[in-house]
Length: 355
Image (cartoon, rainbow, N blue to C red; front, side, top):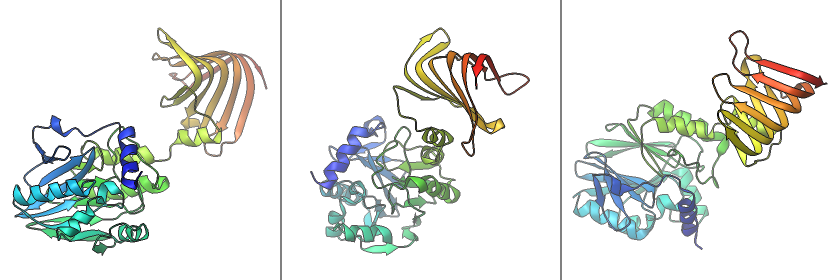
């Protein structure tokens, strides 16, 4: 299987939010697979199999941002822009090295259209024997398009080491490429820098957070909330740290409940009570800079306003939330934890305990 085919299969199998252009009244069918979504008279999203790019048109000049995924559809897009939009294509911006962003670059070159990319993208393309975009920039480039302009900006590693964003200031539209995620989509992380992804998007937000429309590389467009969504999606979490400290394994019940985290072999619900079998429940007490770990064959979670956790027998451990130092360790009978109380942060009540 070729590289493009592999990426496409991964995307199609995993995509949770497929962009469905037929549901938009202003959708233009360029070919059987390729569609244009007209955002306004200057900006169109081109989309195929959930892969998004942009066509920016201003004063009879046009730029393609991110090619369609193959030469055939790229040729269809070029013909549509020239014949139907009656615009001269003065450039193509490649936003990353992956095939769903530059799969049509050979056709772009054949059509005599100048291509632009971050220097890191050009270097990767050379090392991988891929078509190389003609002109490079590092880290920022402004491109005049008719009476408007585009700003192409590399702000750090994220989905790939080379991905950029493209800002259209006159329209307040940001093309985030695969640096920005649509909701419900963690995505392909094969070439990602997960440690830096959130930091990179924080820099994007600082500069371009005034965007009224944000277009991700896959899935549905939204507003600047997608930047916050992406930041939170890849931000290292407190629960992630705690679970790794305790070397927890994924079980059938593996639920983040805010200040609680539930892990269990099975569960069932009886009125407002959730019953967890062979369970471990973690409770955050951030005001006290600690967390509780309750292990038991059976834990009952009353999810009403009183928020009570109870268990007939098991083990209770208390850890420092910053250092993960164990500060208390005991076995219990008849444990009740009232998570919300008018006078104290919580109540931890035991009938019997062995320390």
